[in-house]
Image 1 (cartoon, rainbow, N blue to C red):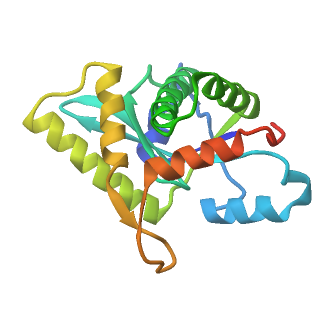
Image 2 (spheres, one colour):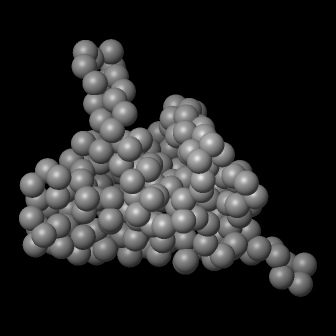
Length: 213
């Protein structure tokens, strides 16, 4: 299952009003924070075999155009792409999957993963993510990373020009994922979000695939 944790701006983008009636795909959550949700899922024996991938979704505006910024809670890998039709969460999921899998395929190839192996991982990914949920909540640490990435995108769009192709958005994700950051828990050394992202994808969607929801 894919879990999309939306900022206020993203939640508003997914909300539509027709004849005075609002349609809100963003659901109330039993857990206020993403950390709390993960901890409770891990403690629930009945849920331990159900895969859940937590992402944070923001909707930003640059030069009067809107864009999605979607960042992985665990690895900080970020996808950037133009917004889909407002309120259409199905179109959003389709675009998210497209950019996610293109990014994975790029980095997996760099690490020597074969085309056939990539196809297997992608197939297992689709099996494990047939459903998704939207919640309005975020995480302060991840939000800080996201704001830094948004600042970089704004500089490019304002000083140069906005991206017009999928390839340009892909190259942006590749570029920002190559920026190093210190390891957690005061460990010495640095990590790169693209390494964490590919390792996570490969580990989760190997032969011992978790059950889907």
